[in-house]
Image (cartoon, rainbow, N blue to C red; front, side, top):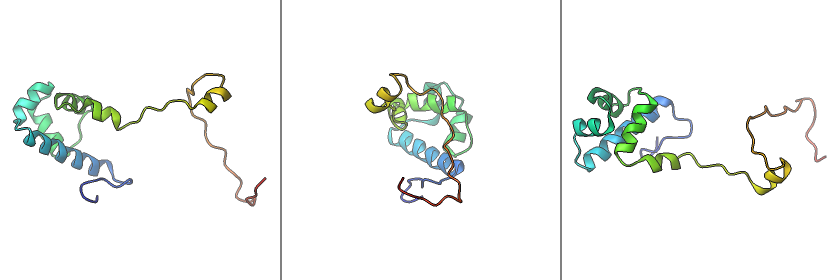
Length: 115
């Protein structure tokens, strides 16, 4: 982690720790007590303390805290909305993909070529 920003290959533990640290700093910057935030979010005080300590939590608890802190939109922006590109829409007859297919593997024996 450089400057508090998790590296691409950061473990879930490192992400939890950083997220908990950031939530605690935001709560303190807003001068909100743990008990007041826990009550606003509808989670237990112990749950909030565990999250701020970087311990595992449920997604529901994390979403409740994000909402209570006014971070719901930011959280949604962390996962970009994927729109179908016009060329893909034309190729698929206007239907959006509903499942993923495994990529075809090239045989290692075949040399790469431009054809």
